[in-house]
Length: 262
Image (cartoon, rainbow, N blue to C red):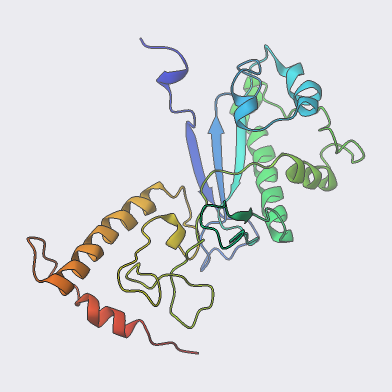
């Protein structure tokens, strides 16, 4: 039997759920729960701490006392953040890196949704299987949040603002939309507005995040994008060996997508 850290996927359970802040009838799920049979302290500060950007103070005061203890991570993930970041040009020099401001947790409902996620974790810890395992929260106060009573709403809101991490799923910086949308960069054919041969085919074209990890959606964008580029080539240079008769011509689609409605 194979053992070791490379023999399991890391995240062993995922749940996609609605909190009380969303309308279950019409809204998509607003929270994902990820369960990992490990924690930041498990490798003794070798890799995970550095990868997640944990400071010396946070490690020494909060995580290092857990060394040698069995740890599991139950992580609420915000699926549809209302906070919006921005990517700006630093200068007219294309070699200069852009200015990136993610604006995490600037909308109060994002914090509230994650707080509901922590309440869900606490509910799971009260189930019979978890109680039989002796599972419990780390009740050591998080550095920076000591002024709040442990397990109070104020404490968890402080905790969220101090210890929330990105899931590395950025999207929407070249969002899809009609020309009348001043924030849209590409049309539904993935072509940059007011251009004829410039396409964007990646997660940046998503107008909003899907209700899950973005990998599957990005793969489908790539498949669709490859077809659209081929169709555009056919339109400009004649037919090729690839055909897609079920779609309108790219020219018809482009003309239709120039219309805006209010």
